[in-house]
Length: 240
Picture 1 (cartoon, rainbow, N blue to C red):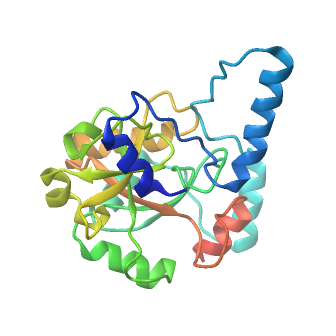
Picture 2 (picture 1 turned 90 degrees about the horizontal axis):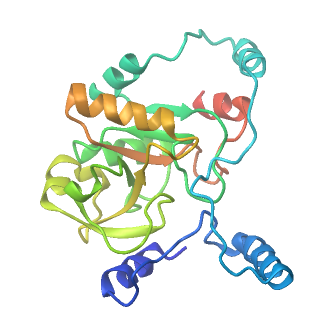
């Protein structure tokens, strides 16, 4: 879970490749134990970790409709251009889409997202939505094809937001709300083949093509002290 330490190791050049799994916390011990037993029983030691982290429950459209009806909310179909326009105008969006993420990091399926400029966007999300300490940094999500333009990437995988990278001048200028005081960011580089993050990837593509926004501020969809939302009912309760 110490993403800053992982970043330092990735920058050191000690290893050709570093892999941080979806569950880097103590909860990942169960996964590691399963891999160990598998290797011991089959004598196959080359275990390929899944690239995707979107392994949570999937909710039927009818379940989502019932949750919104009970809450008395006005509902309309998701519109990519409208979502991008709202973000461009400085609105903050609660994004709940598809199966939820495995592990402690929000990876775009249960996220609160906003454009990372101006710097004050960080304070807005902190004080009015997350209700947490003002010094706590927010993380960026960016397409993997754009990541090297904004960050100094080491040898660690960046798809699970587990590594702190040094921000380049372009990131500091265009996305100050996601650059910490020491000039670093905990980066999630989203790929087209992430098997669950496609909707957020498409949104990032649309934002870059039409609004020249390549990065989004991405924080977990929950209030301070609450777990990340899971079900449609959880999402609506937190949103309200």
